[in-house]
Amino acid sequence: MQSILSIFIGGIVLTSTEILYGKITLNSKFPKLTKMLPAILIVSALYTIVYFNLEGISKTAINFLIHIIYFKYLFEIKTSKSILLTFIYSIILIIPDLVTLFVAIDIAGISKEYYYNNFAGAFFANLIVCFGFMLLTIIIKKYLQKLFSYKLESSVVNVIYSIGTFTCVVVVFYKIIEEFQEITHSDTLILVI
Image 1 (cartoon, rainbow, N blue to C red):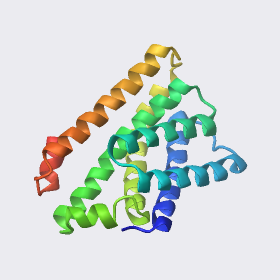
Image 2: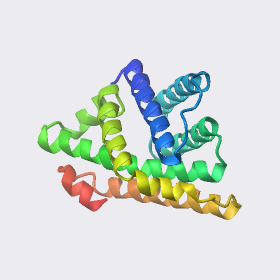
Image 3: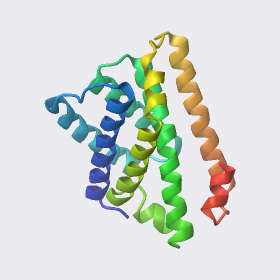
């Protein structure tokens, strides 16, 4: 079982990376330090609480809501833009997360159980995943900035569509994982997903 401190520090790494992602994607300035530091600590604490107390879809949904509020608060953007920012953040974050899983299980030879119980979500794992995430963000920086330079309509339909799409992706992802738990190679699992 991972320590609370390790997960909390991992949360700090993750939330700090989100600020860089928001700055790059929205092409904006860094939020004020007096606003940023308490937000990082609060979101990291919430991330730790959710990590140890929830599982599956409820864990993902609560984290998604936390990130929407976090981006909205820090960058003072509309809710619809915050939802889209969080949605794209979640999609981009999946790629380095799966690559880390693949390297740990198939190349390093770590068992899935050991990976999920001792490595996933902790400081070192988040550091690796966030590095890959920032690399991807920098690579697709122009496309992200172009997407977020448009004025997004803040209608209820767009918000519901974004939340519905994210929910469908999460549900399908978890259902696929449940169906293919017997797969021992993570590269096969990545192809299935």
